[in-house]
Image (cartoon, rainbow, N blue to C red):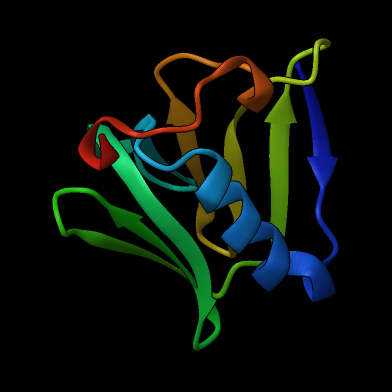
Amino acid sequence: MNQREIPRKDWPEFLASFGRRHRSWLATVEEWPREAPERTRAVDQPLESLGAEDGAIAIHLGNGEVLRVDAPRALRVDVTARGEELGLDLDTARGVTRLRFRAAALPEELDGIAPSER
């Protein structure tokens, strides 16, 4: 697995594009605090969208839940050697929030139509 850091100035555009590419993919969101045990915030929920909002990153899930990652300091995308996007790491002063997909695939290998849009 490789990580690619996204420059802060590119966050809004990157998050919108990443969210569109992975819309309806099943995602798990976990927090890895620096001083506490990890905490799972969502398991296998369809990703609706991502966005930079009011100094935070918002993860919109298909069940209507919005998970906020406040005061992010770094945003990295995890990719395989083939270029498949596995998810995101969002660094904050408190730790890391990880968004991971159940399965990775290259977007061009998919039909591009989410089940809810058929």
